[in-house]
Length: 387
Figure 1 (tube, helix red, strand yellow):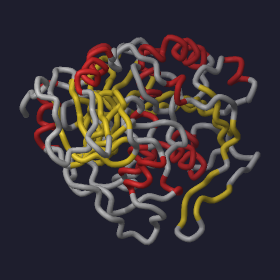
Figure 2 (cartoon, helix red, strand yellow):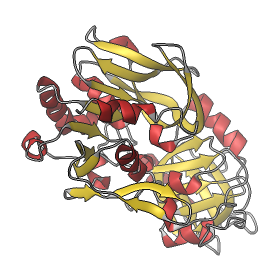
Figure 3 (cartoon, one colour):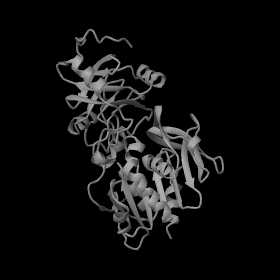
Figure 4 (spheres, helix red, strand yellow):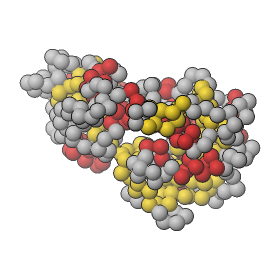
């Protein structure tokens, strides 16, 4: 990868560009929305599920590099959205977007990207970019698309360099629901869509939305709960007024320590009341902070649908889906916390349980079903504790 920041003229046919904060300029072919967006460049190793990735709020303020070269064959449809709020701002692919070849598709992926205001860039050596991220860490950058290749590269570079980055950034408030919602969607079946399930007699889970994926709520319903979703900044009184049998802490974007400034005191109060708690990803990290641990920014993060995680209790390995750039520092876990899961890639923390409490969390995404059912037991365990 060269550093052609001093030569701003795009090569012939280039309609997209990625400008890294170190001055590196990568030219390619743009697709999706026209414009420019700033964020952190990460990579995802999934072979499919790109629409779910792009609508996962945990990817807010990030530009996703897909390591699998052929993206687009599943197309896009409204049923596979993970959220209606902003997720990733853009994506990078090796090849041009593949035309869809799936009977469920209602549009091409590139058309869907344009409709959602997300910027795409193809023709990039994604293997080289991924190696760069692995060696040097996730860089800040600007992704831009203009059909005539009309780019002000110095201005884009300044934008990338002035962006503060994800560390210390609270993004949950930007992607959370603004009001309470009684969740009604159940499991999906072919030809019928999502089941319309709501039963007042079921155990009641109050889910705090820090940037949640909708399929989490469907899994809670499938496990036998009814769910009320509340905003990220909800107070203890807001939550207790709903008379929860248990509280769920969702995934979300940004720095857990920043979001924890207002979320952790609420979680600590819930722990003191011995209310059952289940946290995923960001929710897991803030549960750990509430229990006395700390979190740290990862060098490259874990993102993809093929991450092996060992369950310490019995040595069983789960194939998991992950999306996180911060992690719980397992060296800071106090004696009151049991480490329940670890990554087999790097030994990082992937699960905790609070001793003497019905409270636990996992770093990965059991609702993403990469196993495909390796981790559904976690929802069953949580809902089963609410009786």
